[in-house]
Amino acid sequence: MAETKTQIKSSLIDKVGMDAPLALDETTESAWIDVIQKMDKVYADLVHYQVELEQKNAELEEAQQFIRSVLESMTEVLIVCDIQGRILQVNQALEDLTGKPESELLGRPFNELFGLDSQPLVEQFAEKLGNDAIVDCEVNLVTLEGEAMPLAMNCSSRYDVKGRLMGMVLMGRPVGELRRAYEDLNKTHSELKQTQEQLVHSEKMASLGRLVAGVAHELNNPISVVFGNMHALKRYGERINQYIADVGAHIDPTLQQGLREKYRIDRIESDMGPLIEGTMEGAERISKIVLDLRRYSGVQKEKPEPFELKQVVLTATEWVIKAAREKPEVDYDLPHNCEITGRQGQVHQILINLIQNALDVMEGHQPMRLSIACGRDGNDAWIRVQDNGPGIAEGDMNKLFDPFFTTKDVGKGTGLGLYISYGLARDMGGNLSAENVPVGGAAFTLRLPLNGEHDG
Image (cartoon, rainbow, N blue to C red; front, side, top):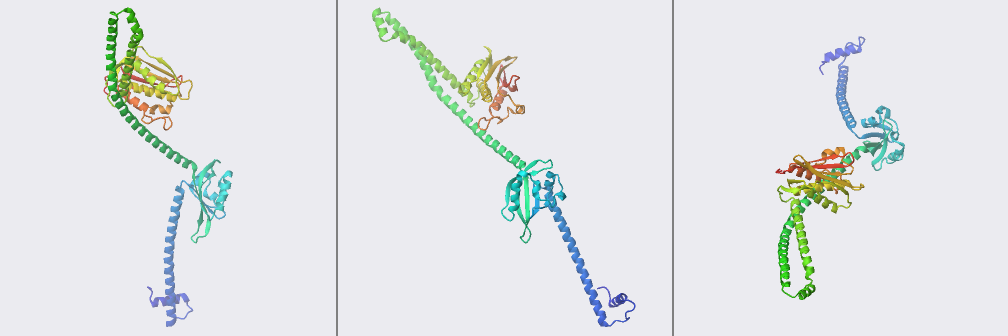
């Protein structure tokens, strides 16, 4: 202590007044010094406690501000209640939904926030105090507009530091957000599953193409044998007929007639030509089918060759309609002569995709009507495939030729048909376009150069 005994003595004299004795004995002086020292210590302790209290208050205010900021940033609804169900605290999310400030909500029964149809469930919250928590119970919160907003509500008991039951805490998330999240997840899962199926389908188609190419190659050898044998039989038949005629000229007519009747030579001669011609025609058709299979397998690169467009249109249409469960009415508008130079197999594949797509969109629509036309326009040839289905949605028009885009159910379409067709058309120097027609339905137009020397 900075004061000396003399100073303390002087101070004490001032405190006790002028009527006090001017002299103090040593005992009294020492007692006063002890009192002052103790007072000084008490004051120092008070200052120390005051500093600690201010620090604790600052920390408490900081903690409260942190908790408040967390509560205000929460998108979930928070309601804190006492044992009687009176509201003690809410967050900003609840204030925004109800349009009522916290000051107006404090002290009110929490069940007033919910609709009448939710009251039986809300009453169970208080009954569950101290027991198991309630999880994902759907209740309707009355919003600012007076509408009912479904919430997925959780209710749990609240205890103090000594473990005594103090009330409950309610937390709820708007069900709409959960449903949207679930729908997004389900959509993503469906798209992933569809993409997986499409990739598997693409691999199957590639494997099928290799298999078809192999089978077509193996069929070529026996077909060549059939062709050779039938040409030889045709020549042999002609010689045998001539031999029989020559022999008959040198024997008795009666005997000749008897032998001809006995061995049915007349019938054999009349059947020989049609049998050989029919077999030759069948072999030629098989040979053409094998050639088409090799073209359509996509394994080998087809060279541009002249071909009649009308015949390709008729063949492609026949292939698809024969395999269709529901047969449409087909209106043709095809010129007698429309020859172009190009890759016949690729044009055939595009037409099959377009016709099959038209039948798919017309499924269940009666009557099913398909219109197919082709012709020339300057240096181009065009083919138009039109259906009388529902047409193309405006939002889908720009996505028609995207890979894996389909409006069909999962498993019913790969979303690759139009994409592949568009790519093949561009490879041949042409174009594939789509439009809705005024009378109803959609039309796809394939345009190709008459002299298809494009390398792709």
